[in-house]
Image (tube, rainbow, N blue to C red; front, side):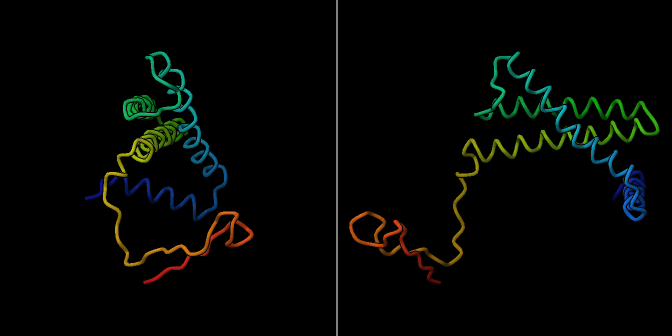
Amino acid sequence: MVDPQVTSSANSIQTVLDNRDVQSLALVGGAAAGGVIVAQEIADRVLPAVGMSRDPTNGKEFAASALAKAAVGLGAGWGAAQSNGLPLVALAFIGVGALGGAAADMFNAVQRTGLASEAPRPNYGYQLERSGSSGSSGGSSSGRSAVSVSV
C-alpha cells in the first residue's frame, strides 16, 4: 500500500514535469545534486578524523563512508520535517541525494571488495575462442588476435 503523501508528492512532481516548470526542476535537481556533494564533502572530512581513508578500499571504510552520508541524509530529512515551503522541498531532496550517495558507496563496496566475485558466473551457452597469435613472431601485424563466438 502506497502512503497518500507519496502519491501526492508523485502527483506534484508530475505536474511540475507536465508544466515544464524550469525553476522547480532546477530546485529539485540542484538540491539532489547538492545533497550528493555535501554528503561527500562531510564524509571526506569525517573519515580521516576517525582514522580511515577518504578513498575507501575495504568494506569497513565503505560502510563508514555510507554511514556518514546516511547521517547527512537523515539530518536533512529531519530539517525538512521541521520546515515548510521551499526549504522543505530543498532539504527533502538534499536528503534524497545524500542517501543516494550512501547507497552508491554500498554498491561500490560490493564491486571493489570482491563480494560480487564470490557468486558463480552465469553460463549463457556461448564460449569465446581465440585464434591467431598476439606475439611479434607470426600472427597479425597489429598485435591483435581474432576472436570467434560459438553458440
